[in-house]
Image 1 (tube, rainbow, N blue to C red):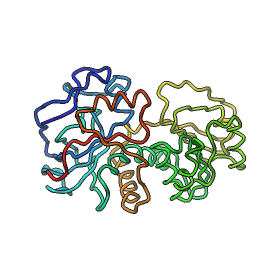
Image 2 (cartoon, rainbow, N blue to C red):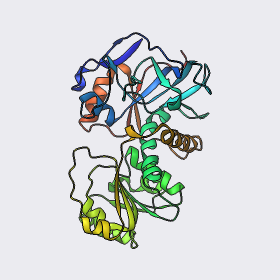
Image 3 (spheres, one colour):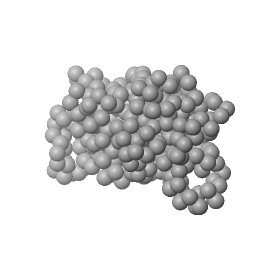
Length: 328
């Protein structure tokens, strides 16, 4: 089968596209013909070795896929040949990746694709929208009526977080580029603030005079001094990006106001948490409430270029690799 893979950790130019033996599913696995896969920042961390995880070489890259079931093992109920499916957790912890003509997916990491949802949209949303759900609900414990601050609100994770927080009945304050203000308001943000504003903290306080209940910085800046100044009593900060940041955390405002800072990586999410996120994401996609802002579809042969562009910051929206024609 054709696959994008590496034989050692390192730079994007180590990605090869060529033939590998097809994967062999176990009794609790589902064999999937892959149509599209997405390119995520975490994929570049795994490929480079910045994020250490169990793998065997040659190692197929990529986490997300949309495709069609070929066969399901006896321990994989609920799936049958021809089912349209998606997954967001291959390519780490000993599992081979998604950027290949076929992939083996453990049954508890595979989800049915809702009818009518475009596969490119679904694979583009898979990772960022699942991340947003975990940040808001699993770790952020957001409730209706609370104020949620989303920094990087026009990005892939940020946009999904704005939609989900608004749908959950929260009051959303979005921080993004001024040119993205209309986009953020269309997603459900009540207030939008330019991240370049020299009075950023004051603008946020004006939009949230009672304080911020949940502070999510998808841009990875992680200014915890500012966060502590903006949080309400018992407010929460959820950290999900900024691998190399080393912020200062003021201890007094943290414990005197019962505040908390919680970090998480989707790679550590339990399968039940991922399934809960997938169900929520699937409903929003099916209802047309969650769509990627922009996608660019490239052939699998350009996997190395896609990784390089992402690392260089030359991507707006989401890169998707087309593995096969859905009419095959």
